Each structure stands twice: as C-alpha cells, then as structure tokens.
Image (cartoon, rainbow, N blue to C red; front, top):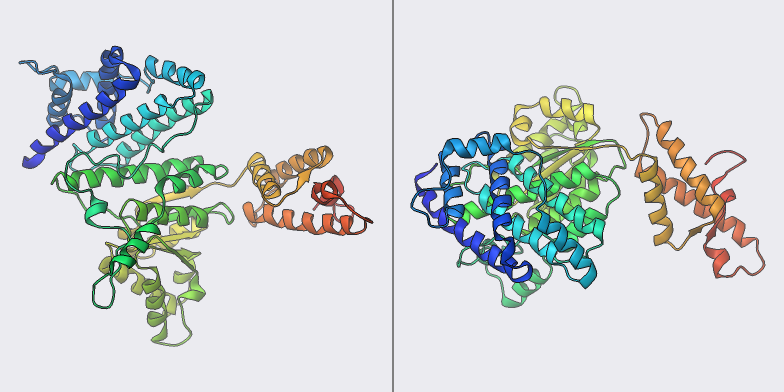
Length: 476
C-alpha cells in the first residue's frame, strides 16, 4: 500500500457512515448487524478480485467494522479465511423485505439501498493502487442482481444506481465541478458565461444514457461490460480526489462482431457516458470507415485523417471495418492513416477515445498487425448475433414505433420467420439490418394492399396481415 493510503480509511469510514445512516432512516437500525455482515462479505469478495487480500485491505475492514474496539476485529489470516469461506453473492434478507414493502407502499427504498451499496463498493475498491476490471465487474454483477430483484417485484424505477455525483465523498468540489465536461477551448482560451451555461446544458444526461443502454434488445454481456467500465473509471476518480496515485489506463476499445449487432449504437451511448462522468469534454461520436480516412495520393491521407481526428476531439472516433486500413500491400495509404491515429491517441489521450470495430477474426489480425495497436487497445467487447426471439423483439419495436399492429396470424408467422432466419443464418447475416429490411419490405407490401381499398380506416392503415410478409408466394 502507498504511504498516503492513510487518507483512504478516513474517507472510507465517512462514506460508510454517511450511506448507512441515510439507509437506517428508511429501513431502521434493526438492520445494522445484518448490513455490516453483508458488507464485510462483499468487501472480502471485492478485494479478492484484485488478486489477493492484503494487510491494507485488513486495515480498511477494521476501520469499518471494529466499532472503536481496542483490538481489531479482523486479522489478515481471518480476512483471507472469510474470502475462502464466502460463497456466491446472496442479497441480505432485509433487502427482500424492502422490495416487497416498496411494492405495497409505492416507495423505492430497495433502490435507495442499491445506490448506497454501490457508493460503498466504489470506495472499497479505491483502497487498491491499481483497480482491476475484475473488481469493477464484481460491483456491476452485485448491483445487477439486486436490481433484478427490484424489477422482478415491480418496484418503481428510481434514480439510477450509477450516478456521477454519488461517489464524491469529500467536502471538496467534485472532479466535474473543477473540470466541467463541456469546457470549450476558444481561440483565446476564454469562454463567456453564456457559452459556459449553454455547454453545461448540452452535457449528456447520465441517467438517460444508462436507461437507453438498458432498453437495447439483448446485449446482456455488453451492458455489463459498459457498466463495469464506468465503475472502474469512477473508482479511479475517487482515488484522484483523495490524492492517491492512479496508474495509466487506456479507454480505447475494440468492438468485435457481425454487422447489425448494435456496435455503433453502443459506441454512441458510451461516448455520451464518458462525457457525463467527465472523461471527455463533449461526447460526440464521429463514425468513419477507410474511405473517410484514406486519400488517393501521397501525403493527403495524413491530412484527411487529421481532419477527422480534429472533429472527434472531445469525443469518440468510431472506425468501422478498421481492419481494411491494414489490409493493403506494402506502401498502402491505410498504414499512414493508422500511424496518424496512433499519434493522436498518444498526444490527445486526455480528451480523445478511439473505438475500432469489425468482424471478429479480421479484427484480431488487425490488432496483432501493429505493436502500437496492441499496446493501445486492450479491452475487447464481443457482440453476439441476435437470436430469433431478439430479432422478433427488434421487429416488434419497429412496428410499435411506426404505428403498425400485427394481426394474430401475422404475429405467429413473424415469430416463426425470425426463428428460421436465425437458425439458417450464414456469413452474410445482418442481424438488426436484416430485420429493418424485412420491416421496410413489409411496409411497402402493406401499403400496396391498403392503397387498393376504397376508403381504409385507421385500423386498416395500421394492421399488418400475414400476406404482407410474403412476396411472390415465398418467404420474404
């Protein structure tokens, strides 16, 4: 542990007391013993994800749970035994009671507990010098399991558990207050108050972006990865605000998977989330492919690529089919684009993120083709194909959004159609893109049918029949 770690137990204790006191107001002090036992269990499991339980972890546990006793409650070997004896994450019994009471009373105390729980785990993770992604994943998994209980019981939605300001535990201004995310660097480096207010008003809304992420069909693993990444960044912010060292961390990502699996959509949400928590100043997404970066003459590619980079500063540069930049012969201008991007990733690393995307195997080859790419891209998100049920869910969403209602026979046919579409998919399977094509073709055939009616009413204009899926007597 670093010598200045002594500041962390004080902050940790303040955070624990502040959050538990707030929770006791809604759940009662009768939960104190069970709460301490539950949090001690979670602390041990969290720290074990960093590789091993250390004396520093033991000191932190004693700061929280010794209750001012002369002799510490925990010794290192006891804490290690606690990790070995701990099994799968189990919510405390009082949490189930809270959720049930919330349903009866229309309250959201169980979701209040999740926010309190998240704040404490974030602070517990900050004990470690180098916070691991595994620790962040543990926080995400625990919170997801608690949220699932709330959702399953029908507890009303509340403020999201991952709020950018919730984890600030000192009396000092937060990172965002000291470094406004939407800060603009004008020609003279001066911003007028009006522009500052406008920039702040345009800052992406964290809760809205998280809700948008959760609303996406499928992508369960991706959602967990995104939330874990945000948790990891928050813990690093905690360490910075308490004066602790933070090792360098790359925020550049590799998105791997087939077309139409939501890679661009997730990239756009992630760009906004980065801005909402202060990692980026703007949060825009600039999407390009090889044609947007590579020119046809010597010396022009670097200029063209730099223009794209400049437009992405403060946000995310999303490069689709990035492997095409390295697929040419020796002297191909795509390599010049790669070199220009790598330089910007180093020079502008404090306010510039790159996400490269494409098919899985070619992306592996692309990253391994250049040592500079290997060193800067070390986080991989894998986007799986949508199954038949998920394809149908995407289709139903398009119908609802555009005011179409499936007749019973059309609904049954559509479910079977998308199940077969998934089972018979090939290398050219387009996932969500194929669904959109099916929807657009259906709209055309439905319009042809309805236009032949003398005076179609509202129901006729909205209704989709089985025949609207079928073209020339065959499957769509």
